[in-house]
Length: 358
Image 1 (cartoon, rainbow, N blue to C red):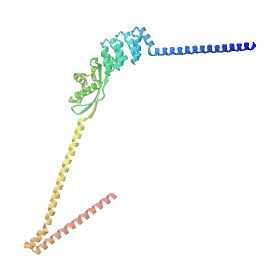
Image 2 (image 1 turned 90 degrees about the vertical axis):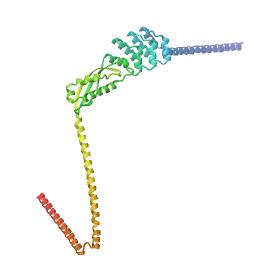
Image 3 (image 1 turned 135 degrees about the vertical axis):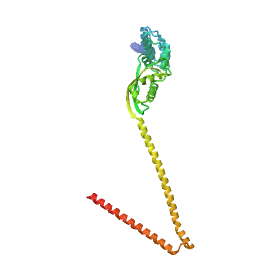
Image 4 (image 1 turned 180 degrees about the vertical axis):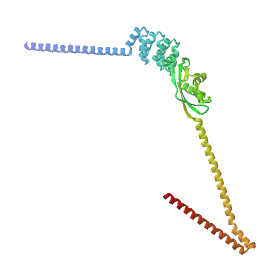
């Protein structure tokens, strides 16, 4: 009986222990499930706030800008930064400019600067200029700074030219520096030439005007004539700017180009004359050498002629010896004269050396 009671108690204890372990395992499983569910919820919240710009949507609603939250999600999916669209849209709405979200997004997808276009529209609105969004976006897509163009259209810009070298008819060089006041022409901004073309045309006009002057004094006396003549040429045609005024800032006198050219021409003429004289000298030397050759050739014929004359009896032996004596006397006198001249020259040189030494 006692053994039965002991076995029964042991069985009850084992059953109680196994039931406690099962309950503990059940509680642990519930805890893990709650942690996993909480992690999933946090992940979903993070994903929601990443793909749904709630802050931008709240800012748009607070600014009375009609932008749906699904539009913002669609911008994310189309790889458009919502902040690049929403903030310019808020700015345009506050300025009273009617711009749609689709217009801004299309301009952004085309590679344009949405913020610059909106700033340009606001500046044009304040200045009383009539510029549509399509024109502003076209100017921006053409590579122009539309906001700077509108600002230059309201406030003209002064461009200073480099020193321009021009020569008057009397050969005096003038170095001219001008200041050009230009204003942007919005209608010609697309396809119009830039500042470099304007400066090049102004430089050409200044060179032409100074070159047509008879004297540099006339240009120095009336520098405003340059401005008048250059403005009359209509140099801003085909450019993105409108020339308001051209002011001559400085005029300096440079080189005397005419005298330099005349000097170079004189040097060239001198070299040509020297070349011609050298040519004539060479011809004279050649002619002299030809004449000497003819003389030598004629002297070589003398012995033959003498022999022939002796054979034919035109001269006798006595005449021949007399001729030889005359030739010998001539050679002797020539040698004596050469020796006397050399002695006199040596004596003169010695006298000069003694005088210089003393």
